Image 1 (tube, rainbow, N blue to C red):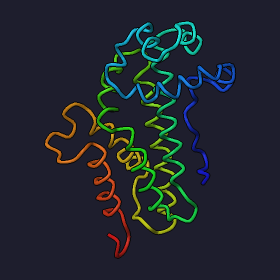
Image 2: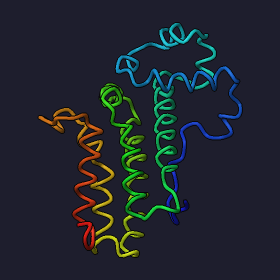
Image 3: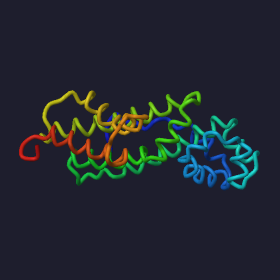
Image 4: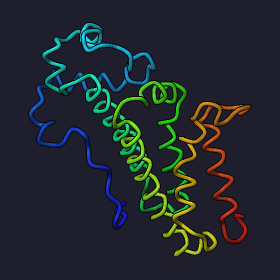
Length: 209
């Protein structure tokens, strides 16, 4: 599915730099995306990362010139991977509302407990907030485009699509803040998914409302 005017955030590791990486470095980037979910990862030194991943410091520094940039690069790669998977949930056979529901619930994988813990641990890094904001803005842009399609199809009532898109796109991040969902019964993802259902039901036109 194509959404006019919606572009994914520019990657930290640009395509030209990625092509220069060795097969081992690309493998490490993939493996580090699993390690990055652990909150202690943000506090490891480059030497500790190299030791745990079974590679040389030179190999790591070939990916990024500092630990901070390595962490941001890995986080960016992980968020882009989640974003691609979420976008791939969209299908032309779906109605705009069905597509939006599927997209947002897939995007909420980014707010699983371990991801929330790590996000808090790496938030002090220069550029971390800007990175997260860029990805959240992309989610909001996709959401807005789908809301506008839903309006055109007569599936939802007339609303301020910009405001509602930012509300829906920011649910996971808001609930994932320390104390953001105090007293919730399920996980952050489960709560965010349930709220998406409630909000979309409230916006529906006709018998689905």
